[in-house]
Structure formats: C-alpha cells, structure tokens
Length: 141
Image (cartoon, rainbow, N blue to C red; front, side):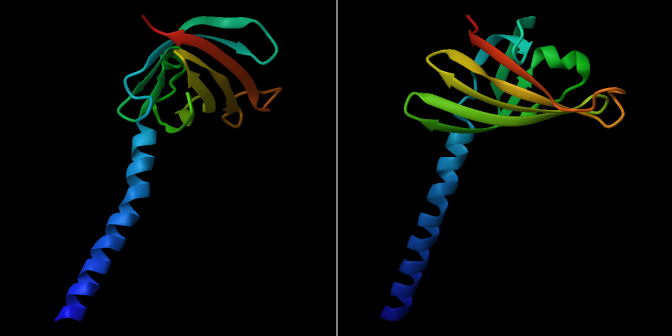
C-alpha cells in the first residue's frame, strides 16, 4: 500500500513538472496578445513603400492590415521574451501571391524586423526569388 502511494505521488509530481514548460511556452506565445502597432514597410535597403500598416497580435494570431489587399491570412505567432525584448516569428499565406515569413522584435513600445516574401511559383515571371522587406513602427495610440 505504501509503495503504491509513493508511486502515485511520483507520477503526479512527474506529470506536474512535465506541464511547466508547456505553460511557459503558452505564456510566451501570448506575450504580445493585445498589442497593436503602426509601422512602415519597405524593401531591404530602400525607403518605405507602405506607411501606416496596422500590425495586430490577438488570440495568438498576427495580422498585417496592409497585407489584406493581397489576400494574406492571419498567422499563429511564436514569441519569446528575454529581458525587455520580445521576439516573434510567424508565417502568413496568400493563395494568389505566396507566403510571407516574418521575424521581429518588440521593445519599449517599438516594433521592427523583416519579412521575406516567397512568391507562389509562376507569380513572378522574371524573378521568382524571395524578396526581403523591413518594417518598423511604434505602439498605436
């Protein structure tokens, strides 16, 4: 009887410890939820070509309002916080244009990062190579 009780306690402790990392990951994944930013977007090495994009993190999803016109969906974002900075990455898809791979950092109300457009095969006749963009902005007031 005593051995069975110890076995049950050991199993319960093990199960509890196994859930801790999952809980921490879930908390980090939602670390940006509720945040909204206004950002400019440009091609790598160039000035902004889009101003005032609204970037939203809500319910574990990332959304770029500027990308709506191209049919890009909301994407499940992953985030990690270290010190005063939260980094994130996410992929969004457009049936017509391809996919965008976003990576960014949020710190002190500022957001910045890059995204790479991987065009859908056949979309760009002359240059099917990935296209890198930058984005930078601040918390929407």
